Image (cartoon, rainbow, N blue to C red; front, side, top):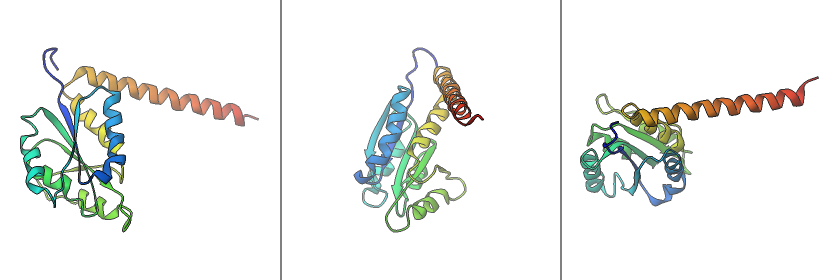
Length: 170
């Protein structure tokens, strides 16, 4: 990314405000990397016009990727993907009835030509990590931050292993 160029934003969209506790975890990851984002509540079923409009205007409004979290029928990620060519990452959310399996299947089973990258049930943190990787393709500074974080994670696991090895050494 050129110095004068503004970093692309991430759109975090959820189908209901009851999804906020899970989706806040994505925002926390983006905050860690100082990546701008907006958070919205748009329902694929209750506010379809607004959801479609958000997706249609996302690129011109400075977004580079959209994270969409929804439970139950989980149509939100697909609806957004149908209205933009930006990458959409679906977060299937756990519901009481089927523990999120319904949302997982609805999110991952997209028709050819309208893909939605899908993370684990309630996996909003990984959705944010994937969004960061997508944005880092065109942003060397962000790519460096991600590489540095991978080294930090590696070193943390090695340190934990060393502690366990010491504890159990005979």
